[in-house]
Image 1 (spheres, rainbow, N blue to C red):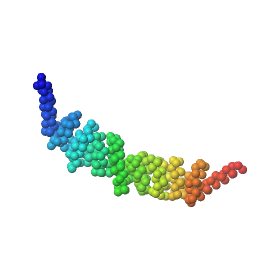
Image 2 (spheres, rainbow, N blue to C red):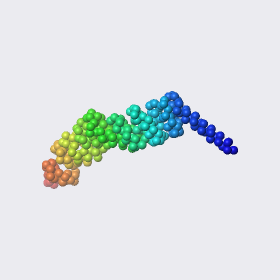
Image 3 (cartoon, rainbow, N blue to C red):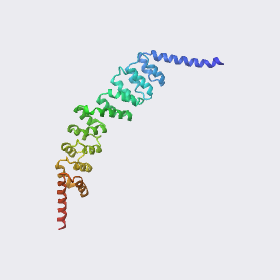
Image 4 (cartoon, rainbow, N blue to C red):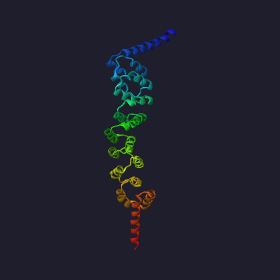
Length: 272
């Protein structure tokens, strides 16, 4: 009876050994079929096959059922000769650990990082890590690339570029569909808001009609006089009085006093 129980086990071992040998000795074409095997331990064996190359690994990394340990094995196998395509494939696989993603991201080019930020299949953690890496490079990024990033970047990237206050970059930021009004308010309160850049916002078709932004612009002591002349007559009286309190110690207060005097005169005439 013992012998009959051992026979199936011996048969299973023989099958496993045959499969192992097949994985180690398979040719390049056969490997493309073998990398679809659901057995992750067998896939780890395939990595030891001398015929395995970058194309096999790229096909393997398209699978979303890999394990973090198998991803790490692929990285160790290729880290000295890894191409950019392979680096991107490793970074964007959902099984790749956050630690490995952070290790690989600095090796990517600027717009490869941006593509990763916008990649629909990338995980939230992968996108965030790529975005942070890109943000760290912004201070040394050439002007032309900054303009492109302002047009194509994520909300966080566009907001960061806006804060620098470079007029040529700012113009592209203001037209970005990802720029949020909160970022414009933050810019208006910061050191990058000059007479020139404030006027760029005040003239921009997307932003010039927003009441809260108009008020923020009028509160800035660096705002050119023309915007007081154009916008004060449209402000409701409570907002005008609030603005006067904000600017009570600046030369801009005279414009508000003049507008209040006009309104008081108009009321007086209407009662006559």
